[in-house]
Length: 76
View 1 (cartoon, rainbow, N blue to C red):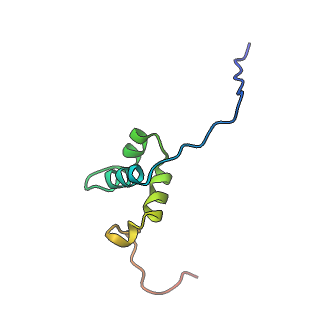
View 2: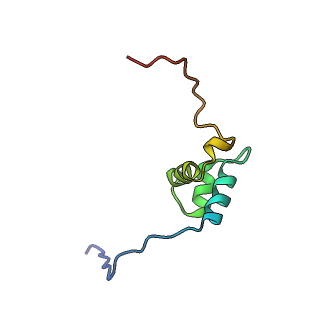
């Protein structure tokens, strides 16, 4: 017989303080850190950390967006 789970109420979204988000983002992008490992320890998806980095403005304050350098031309 198959196991069945019954949910009695919807799961709540977790809320993170800005301070906690900043701490997780800082840990994830520290030299030698692996974002996936930090995400696992914080119980969030790695994509969430990248989103928080963008929202908190870390991209403009020293973190690079990507390793790709544009030559100014668009791909065809």
